[in-house]
Length: 101
Image 1: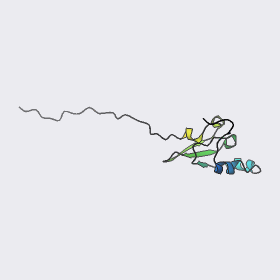
Image 2: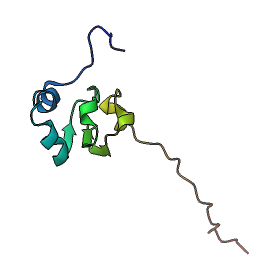
Image 3: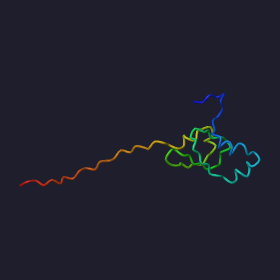
Image 4: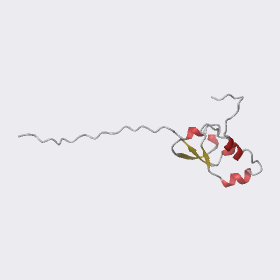
């Protein structure tokens, strides 16, 4: 858990792309650019709402659209890193042995 006095964590690349362009925000929101995020620990900010996002989990990208419900969460919460375990179902074996007469 991050201390509140430190503020929200966001990588330099995302901050530069979104927060340092206040004059172009209207045009930028209309373009609806797809974000590629490698930093799973970055926080989703309100300026990301409405954009499509692809988060890298170490193996592949997970795509999702950012809504108002996602604000405040981390990007890593929406890209699972573990594979779901599915138990294998064993089929009954057929009796193939021949009886001696």
